[in-house]
Image (cartoon, rainbow, N blue to C red; front, side, top):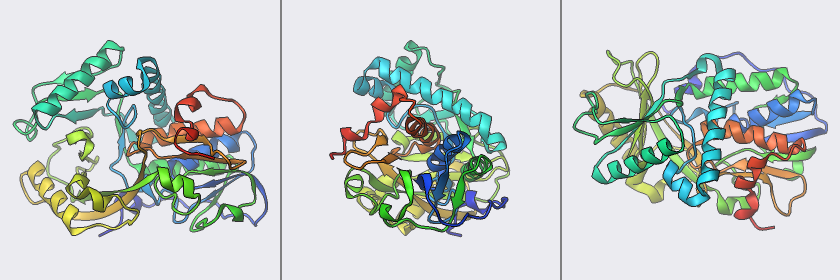
Length: 376
């Protein structure tokens, strides 16, 4: 009941781990970032070992809402103001390319459905209108929706439809990515928690743990805030109400339906923000109660909850991930802190840090430079 619906799916096992010995790169974290990084490195012949404290995708990669969205954690107009219009445009284009990359690798774990960002009141509608205009001015596909179908009609005051986005079965996707990495020669070590970087025999180390960084580097712990997200899943509904991922109230509410019509609903952590800023991966009666009531509001009845769980993601104060070398730690890299937008950014940044290790000096690294928040 308290396990992730995504992780409950049967899957093929991975090759057995090899005997101990040094490797070129040790990757800490077997989620989307770690597996993406290992895949790129292993294809070049690097000896790569991935350490995962539980099973592959057992952390945030298998415990999220299954959204695959372009862009970052901030709205596009806000990102343009923060980063400058050119850099924001480049970031959004970069994530759109990685949505295409995800579609290429994920197979039936990904569906290109688009997504719907909803305005819960007049103030949020004004914010969405500003984002919509900024997207259109810079040439991005976006559609404004004034007329909303039931059960959205009357509850929301307009929406942006983002055509490039999609829906994921995230655990299936990351397991598939891990299989590609293993086929390329990467070694996957499940159920092996790394408690100290000193125990790793590797020339380079990548910390790819998003919000699960606790204890590996104190400086990293200080700038990546672990944050809990809670989710529920219902039994299959009789009808299809939501053809794509939906989100509202600045992302505090989010939901979608699976291909078999189960309703996946997450969020509402703003009902107890202080309590949800935690690394404790457990559900709470308060947030679960709000989620159950929201399910009833969306469906008009009391659909049975079949799964409920919590996952941890990493939040940074500027809502951009940390990707690159860690100052003051020779041979140690990080790719973490996606601020709730890790499904696409995790793939993009995992591949990005791999390219950096290979000496390719990709220009996107500048935007995510860890030194902006970390000090040596």
